[in-house]
Length: 254
Image (cartoon, rainbow, N blue to C red; front, top):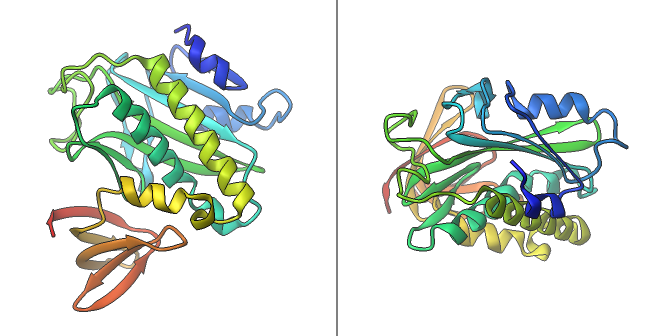
């Protein structure tokens, strides 16, 4: 992959013929901060041992998806603000996908999936490493219907579209860098505008959800908003609970 547009945005872009996990490879290489500066990118269309949240495995046929890991070194000084980085990535990727699928509804499922018409097309996993954050994304590009891991997934191919990978990646990188830079400069997501952008793109708000919480607890209610810390607010029996981590299932429209 030549990717001239993406190379013009990133500080370094390496394409691997195959990788177990692009996040894991980038973590090893990023120890050398001089060789791997802010906005370095590692990608492959053949990831064999991808990982998602809760240590879930993620696999796809060779050439059917795009696994991208981005190294962020220019981070907000406040650790709490860094919790917004996965949501920033979700907004950036949703916007990049929407550019190529203008006739479809593209949104972010809290906290880390991008949906097209309610079906997952991209997953996001952000991991802290050394003095940086690595943001990994996996985009379903050429997967056929039989390739999809679950019925609730989709791909560009299933939607009848052929992705322009260079255009997608360059748009994603540019907006991700802009959103994180604004977050770092402002110090919080509300002032930077990220809170509003994430709220506008969030498909979860307004839906009835089932949230599996730590300790085998389950919360069922209506997702009402994102709070200033990026937590999902869920109202159950008139009581609003702020969820910072959990597995969320969209039950039905509110």
